[in-house]
Length: 182
Image (cartoon, rainbow, N blue to C red):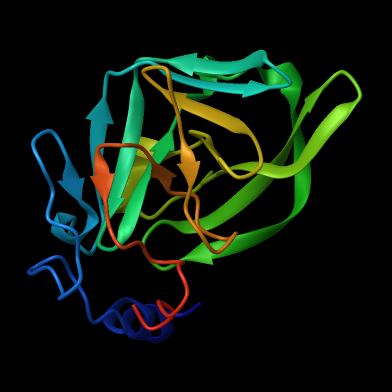
């Protein structure tokens, strides 16, 4: 993607966190609205206990996660590489491109003979603004069990996005029916 294409992709977003649209849920005490998150996205450190499990077995655990916050999306949690069991990761084919972070690579997550395809991803060479998540791993909660301080994470709709929905996050969220223009 050349610089002009990248500029067009970044400029295509209409909603940038300046105001909540009609129909957005008003956050209660201790809650966050995804409509208050900015675009371009930001990275925020999170010291809560984050765990990822497959078949009840711990794959990753940290209190040093990074949350990427972007208008209309639940946070995506990125875990440092040393918090993830490397013996459970297998490189997967394919890649995707984010106009904010760069090119992602994917991993299957395996325990014994059980492998979940494309359950995790990382950015080995992110754009300069996102070097804090270089080689960190994010997991799809619709493919593998993810937890924040013991709460089981719910998946962001749509299958592509990797946002983590917990009780503290209110929407509506990008990925739900009718949100393709967000």
